[in-house]
Length: 298
Image (tube, rainbow, N blue to C red; front, side, top):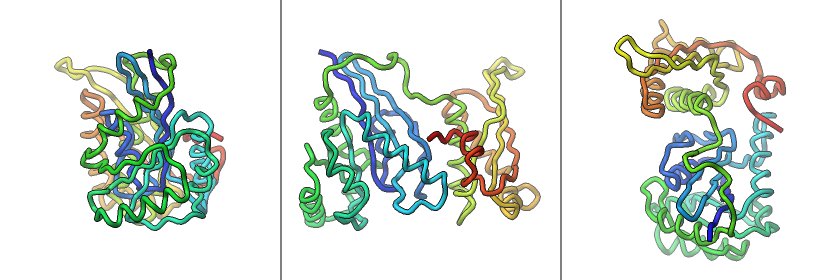
């Protein structure tokens, strides 16, 4: 019997959804930083075995009071996960406070799809505290199973993966064996640049930028090595942000380009020539035309 299905991971911003999906897949599919609201799009990651195929879905963290149209669209991605799931994984950070009135708790209470409660970062909590939180959530929801894991360390992740396989319904392969994601290399290259912006800059800057890949061409170096020539535009939402992103004498953007290029070479497994340019597109987070250009879909 061949099993297959869509396994959708939901949770708050910075609960560790991207880290968990990468651990389950074994590939670095989603950008991971310590800052919340890192993932902005819904990303599929595909695991295929001899008798199974799991299509994992990483989504943005749900934002209870969105401030921009971009955040409203991010929330819509979360809503779509309730429409096509064969299994829901609710990833919980036990260090945070939760209540019965939380948006996701309310949605999951009416959800008819099997639910796994997964407590991440459980290595940072006492067993007594974890038991308390587990009891609390079981009052609110009716999970099929509960798991205590550390996505960062990989603790409990193999056991979770085995349980997911057992939960899958009988079904066909949805994607070819070799396909790991529904996203293109261009998408991941833009995410790598945004990851490095999140790492390198502070305060509002990381949340005010969007990256657009102008060109992505494969060629060769003089000595015959594979080379990706990439040109990217970094859009900022205010004029005052452009000089901060560039830095004095261009120092900041040079460092950004250097770190992003290293990550791209690791990801693409070939040499990279990277050009970065900064443009101003005021208030792009509330501009529907700009959001459409950047791949945010209704």
